[in-house]
Length: 114
Length: 113
Image (cartoon, rainbow over all chains, first blue to last red):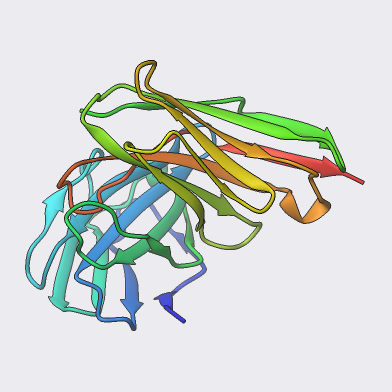
């Protein structure tokens, strides 16, 4: 079974802190994604990566950055956390097919910024 | 870019009844439409998908229909069971967008025994 593991299920941080959310997948997938989930807004794409050291902005990249130094690991970074970044963060991975490709999600990291 | 609208936001049905969730999309170039189910405390999981060259697809109690002309697609769940209670997301993908799905807002389905 494909497994996408997010390092922290729950985090509480203070405004201005630097936050790292880690994600590891074990199926050699090329694609990795970070989504943010908020009630009534669905899943919104923050950043995605097609390959090591490659990244592209999604729909809401402001206030976030990412790092992909190894194929299996994709990190989301909040340089200076703010209260409006309190949310559920979901990491996902998929094979690159150019067309379709099932997304495999982790269980999510719920971040609270005080 | 693509925009996906999903309705209703909440849906409550009695066990055994049918449930229908509807989505519309804006980009006529979108050609792949998956549905994901998210159970409490878990990440979303693919339950069914449909490509633009097909009008309907069925898998046991769930089915998806696609109307390309009207740019809308729907999820149908028949004979609902309590374990169908979850949040459901529709999504759309434009050709050669490398798996970059655009999701709807989600529907919280509650099946009452």
